[in-house]
Image 1 (tube, rainbow, N blue to C red):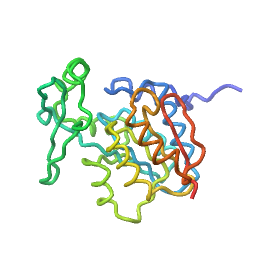
Image 2: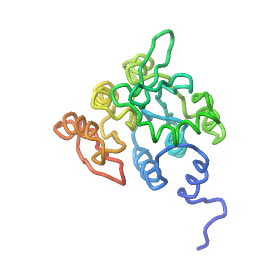
Image 3: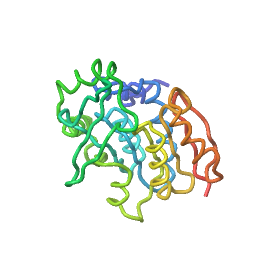
Image 4: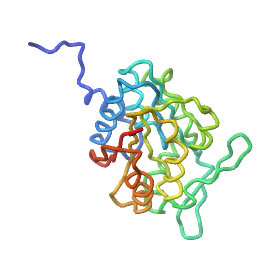
Length: 241
């Protein structure tokens, strides 16, 4: 049986969608992210991403949500502009951004090293100084602007934004990689997860000890989650309750 000309393999679609989107997730990890998100297709609820940058992973989650149907993606990030960043005396970088009159520090507990910041991030900002505007442009160019909603803030801000009745079936945590940040994201967001829903972590048990510590304490040592496993650099668990 010949393949219909209207059917494009999902890996080809993903590669094309993110080809020119700046970010650090290799294509194999994006395949994994798509499959994990799509696996929640029988559950009620929406998809939440913490840590979005310019939209590379949000586009993949948006495509999964589009295929599932009746599913939205909420992409949470501080979306700092170029002028929000500061170089510390040790050469590392952090940022401070204002959201509705409140100042938020980013990469304060875990700063960004000088070399990768100047090699990768500064050239990006030279072309796209307004990160949120660029994110929205990338989402729109992939026809996902009715599915993916950016939220400028953190998990606490998002919790206030959606209220107590929000339901999440897939949570992707890829924000700041400090112990305090990962722990807070888990504690704030887990109450929204439906039974059978998935939490997926980036960079777990690779080179970030503080990420590992938070996952061990709040996920692996907890009886609330089952099916802990890894796919590429993505560690995922399902909600037991």
